[in-house]
Image (cartoon, rainbow, N blue to C red; front, side):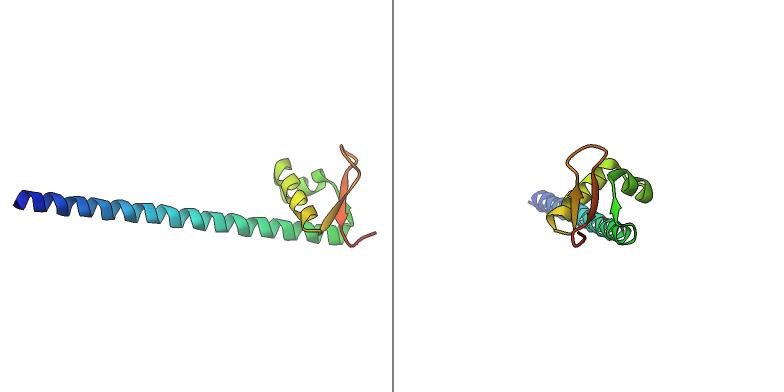
Amino acid sequence: MPQTILIIIGLVIIVLLLWQKTREKVVGICAAVMGMDAKKRERKEKILELFASRGSLNNSDIREILKISERSVVRYLDEMEKENKVEQVGSTGRSVTYRLKSQQ
């Protein structure tokens, strides 16, 4: 009987320790995601500032200035197009540029 009680107490302690570790990982993941969201917002704001100062930009301009990947630039520009903040000028290829939506 005393051994059974010790085994149950041991199992409870193990479960509590595992739960705490899992909770710490979840909190850490949430913090990392929030940090990425903040970085993404900052980069998108910087891109909007670049448009305000330069008028129009292409993908490589943004990539070189912000030192980010081509895929990230495409993703940010796509999101900003959906948010009606920027518009694409041209259809495909190297001639494509973007500008603030309010510009004519």
